[in-house]
Length: 260
Image 1 (tube, rainbow, N blue to C red):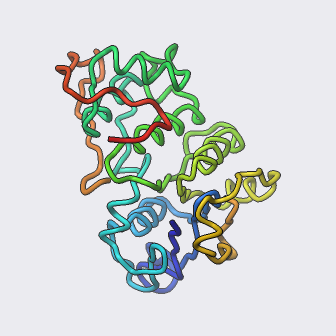
Image 2: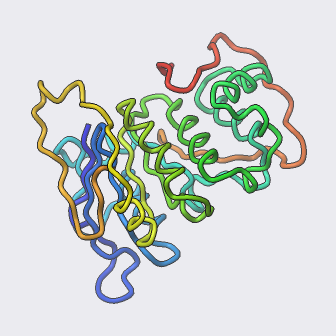
């Protein structure tokens, strides 16, 4: 699966909300695109995720312009004002909400099991604002992958939470090794750091021999190495864990396992 943005833009001239950008993200070849100004990362993510049509340029999935297919296949992750959990929620609260929205069991035991697999048990009651960036990115990406039909992620500005770029980049690489298509919208400084780091071995695409896909291209502001229909709305109360939801017939998932 190959997601490509070809000179997509919103507005014209100096001060355009989203100057023209190009980037490619493929299986085991995550894409990175740098944008600046406060609102540009959200706009770029909305366009890349099929939620907003660009004024110019093309967004294609496997060569076809199909916004509905892009929207169904890609989840927005940590996108400001759109898919960003409230910072006062705890890790357990965010996990419970996402498990329920993805159609999985969201009782306390299921939440505990999910966090244990991710190595986040000790952070169960940590507020999201205090969670290290690497762990925040891992948690939100793994939860997004549970949504029905999602095969790729558009991750927005992980660098805004601070921390080491190499740490959250490692999470992106781990996802890519599993065949998840990841497009990261970031800033110029963070992209420069990504480019300066050694390129990892992400393995080969299992479909490479059959599909004979072209190698991803690059743009001067891009690096190729590296919702379902509605985005998450977190409405749990911030101070206490909400009551456990009733069990249903769906077993709790573990990160990296097949989704229901």
